[in-house]
Length: 221
Image 1 (tube, rainbow, N blue to C red):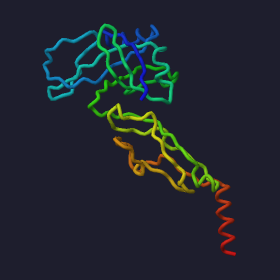
Image 2: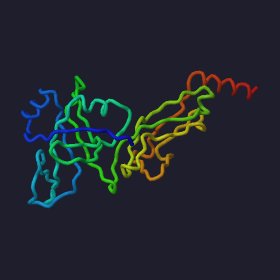
Image 3: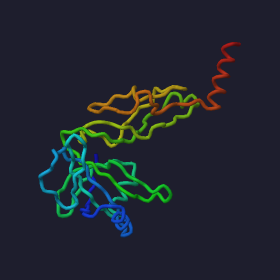
């Protein structure tokens, strides 16, 4: 994966009022997850923006509230590419992370909140990877239309082994045939979508149906 440089600022004041003030100032509230669970009661020191979030059973995680500027994340959000983020927290630590979730305004599509997930070299993660089709399907040559049903697939792997895109060769895909998740295999990757989910398919068009009908009529005569 390509890397994306991003700087964030710790956010020490939480709550709806504070969050609205952040957005009013042209910033985006965010949160960084990823540290290993800790035992409660927690006796360690918390840095700027850090807080304890309970998990139950006397377990909790330390997460960091942040803000980022709209301009700094524009090319990270509005792109078909995927990145591992080199996230630097002002006055704190630098970590590697990925986008975990983005919340958009239902009307304006403005970014309301971003969740980052810290990644580690020895800990698998799950993320969506774009699908890229290559080749010329046999079914298309016969008059069909190739449709990409799933533009991204969810994969589980070490972040260092996740490709920028998942390439599927469709040369042998015939009329009315489909490639499902269960048909795909990649080294060192686990696809976590439903195995019967259709990734791409060559669908019959009117032209293809006409060709099939003409062929059937020729054979019967």
